[in-house]
Image (cartoon, rainbow, N blue to C red):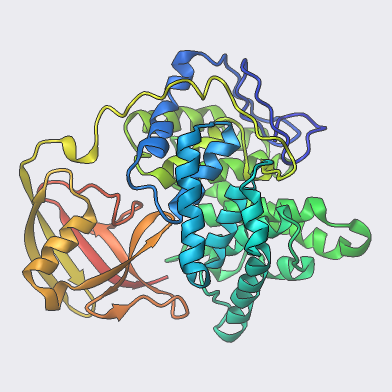
Length: 436
C-alpha cells in the first residue's frame, strides 16, 4: 500500500524523497526519511545478495525476481537470467512443481506490465494453479486436514488466484483458513510467516468479494484476519522482531494491510526496522530468498501491490551501480574446523568430521556420509529456501504423517536451512526425526 486512503492494490509510489513504512490506509506507523546514499546503502547488502549470488536458481529465482520488481530495481541482465531460470524450470518439471511454486512463478512474471506475462498464459499457469490448489484441498479431505504441501503454500495459491483472476470459492477459503487450524502450527509453535501470508491472501479475497453475495463468508474472513493478526503480534520479541528475523518481513506486510485489527501501541514499527537494519549489517540475510522476503517491507511494499495491469516502475536511487559484496562464504580462512554430527531416530548415531571453515550444515552431512554411507546417507531436494533434507537412512519425511528432519545445534532447533547455516568449530550438530 502507499499510505493514502485512495490507493488501490498495485499502486506504485516511487517518490525519491520518502520511503514509507505504512499500515494500510490508516497510517499507524510511518517511517519517513530522506532517501540518501547512506540510507540506501543500508539496503545494498540485500540487493547485492539477490543480484550477485551464484546460488539463485530454480524456484529461488521467482522470489528474487518478484522482490526486485516490486521495489523497482531494474537490472536487465539479472532479470533476464532469472526469467530464463524460471521458464526453464517450468518447462523441465512443470508437473513436479508444487502449488506454491507455481503461485510464486505467476506472481513474479506477472508483477507489472511486461512481455514475460505472456509466458503465464501461454503455459496455462493460472489453470495449473487452480488444479493444484484443488488437489491440496482434496488431500486435506483424505488425510486428516493435511494438505499436500503446507498452509504457507496454500496462502500463496489463494493470493495468486485472487490477483490474477483465477477461480476459487470464497466459501471454501473462509472454511480453510480458520485460525485454529493445525496447519498454522509447526511443532506446537504458531508459524508467523504462514499466518502473515494467510492475512495477505485473505485481504485480497476480502477486497474482491461482493458483500451482496458473499457477505456471510466475508465476515468470517474478517474474523479470521483479526485472530491471525493477534497471533502474529503475540510472537513479537522484545527487540521488535516478529517470530524470528526471517519471518519478520512478511509479518510486517501483514500488519501494513490490517491496522484496523490492532492498536497503535501494540507494534513499534521503528523498533522493528532498527533491529532489521542491525541484522542486515551483521549479514543475517545472506541467502537470496531471505533477502528477497525482507526487502519489500523495508520500502513499504506488500505482495498486494502486485498489479499485472500497472506499468513497471524503476526507482533511480535503487538502480545506481551496486557495490560488489566485500566477502564470499568461502573467502574466510581456509583452515579446517572440527564438528560433532549426530543422526537421531530411535537411537543416536554420531561422528566427528572436519570441514573447511565457512562450511554449511550440508557440507557436514556430506563429510559424514563419506565416512559411513550406511549410517549417514541422506537425500536432499531444492526448495525456494535452498536445499532441504527429505530422507536420512532411507527414512523419508512425509507431509501426510507430518514428519520431517529437524536441524539442531547444541540441542536447539535452527531457523536457517541446511544449505545456509554456517557451522562453527567445536559445534554439536544434529538431524532429528521429528513430527510437527
